[in-house]
Each structure stands twice: as C-alpha cells, then as structure tokens.
Image (cartoon, rainbow, N blue to C red; front, side):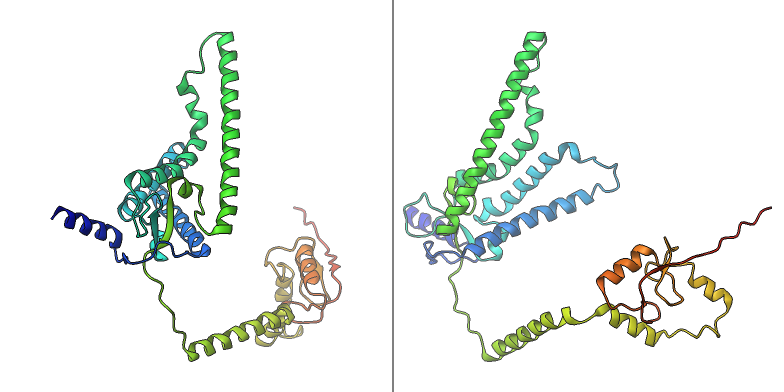
Length: 330
C-alpha cells in the first residue's frame, strides 16, 4: 500500500500542473526556446520591479535606492517560491511548455528538482548579483577599519586585497559563463551556468504535437510576405517630405499676397515655418516664409530637391533675411 502511494506521489509530481509524465526528458529542446524563457523571466522581474517602485512614486526621490538590491532579491525569491519551488518551472518556461528536469537522477523518466536543487538555483541566480552590489558595504562588517595608523594601513591593504580578489573572482565567473554559453550553443543544454552547477536541465512539459498548416493559411502568409517586401523596397524611393508639402499646399492653399493684409504678412515672419518658434538666424528660400537656419539647412540636406513645407513653392538656396529694426525712444 505504501509502495502504491509512493508511486502515485511520483506520478503526481512528474505530471502535475497539466504536464505529461510520459514525456521523454531526453528529447532535445530548441536553443531559442530556452533563451526566450530566460528573456521572459527577466522581463517579468523588471515588470514587477516597475510596478513595485510606482507604489512609492509620491514619496521623495531615491527613497528605495538604499535598499534596492535587497528588494530586488526579495522579489526574485518571491517569484522562486511560487514558480520554481512549487512546480519546477519558471513563468517563462511554463509559457513555452518547458520545465526543469533533475539530471542527478539516473532514471530515464522525468524527475522534478529536489528542494536543494531549487534552493541552489535561487541562490546562484540572485546571490552573486546582490553580493556584487553590496560588497563595498560589507567590508566594515568584517572589522577591517580599526584605530591606529598601522592598523588603518593594514586594514586599507586588506580592503584593497579583498576588492582585487572580488574583481578576479567576478572576472573568472564571467569567463566561465561565457564558456558555458559557448558549450550551450554547441550542445543545446544549460544556457546558464547556475543550471549546469545544480543539474537543472530544461525539458518539454508536454509532448510535441505535429502542426497541420492548411493551404489557405500558407497562401495568405505568402501573399502578405510578398506585399511587405514590396513595401520595404518601395517606401525608401518615395520622397515623403515633398509629398507632404504638395498635399499641404493643395489642402491648405494660401491666398495671394494681394488678398492678404499687411498684418498677416508680418505674422508669417514671426515664426519658423518648420518648428513654429521665433526664427533663429532667419533665412528664406525664395517665398514669403521664414525659417530658422538650422531647420531649413537640415531640411535641404535631407532633400536636395526640397520645396517650401508651407506653400510648396520650389525652394532655392537658403538666404539670410535682412531685417530692419527701429529703436523707439521714450
């Protein structure tokens, strides 16, 4: 009876949460699926941190900065408790029908991670990041700063030695992560060094199903793909600036200068035709509109055959506007 209960518990652990216990853990998982799962997990942590930090947006700026590493580690442990610890899978893996398989077991069937493996995976993921951010604050906790000139000298040398040691260890860890990633690209297992150390391998949680793609679907996709390639080829050939100027001149055609009053003509000289601000180093291109020098120069560089963006008139080289200023005394 106890043997039956034990076998039932193993099946429940292996096939819980909608997973199939008959899935072969030795079926290779696509590398892109494993990398996508890591990206989804990172995006989820960032999303949680953004939502959490918004709760304190009405407080004084920088209120979370002194304890930000601890809060990030706490959020990571909360995610670990309700995902990896409970189901041997992360949120990103569950979205891609993946889960962790314990390679320490010699059984050919699926085995979930043990509590020690899940704990080690959490510590190796969040621990180094927290330690690197808090190492400069941990040195005084070791009693390195003592009184006396000789003691201060020895403490300073020890602190410098510890910093150098941390730099060397960090460099070695990053180099090991690089080697591990190159091995992952070669064999397709353990994209993260922590997974290789703890023996947590990503496997499928459900058997792969053969996807039946209909002819109508493929025909529609090919048509839209060809249309998208045509647009990619055509859009760079269209002069959007000139087209916009022509459309604006047709839709908002201005009246002739005879119909305009002197006040409207003066208003046109008080703002740049591109940025709408007071013209800086005012220049004209042959029409009645005035532009900032940098605005019209960048516009002419972008389009060698440019027209006035306001009236659509053919533009000449920018010329400096000579304006007469009259000083009125009291």
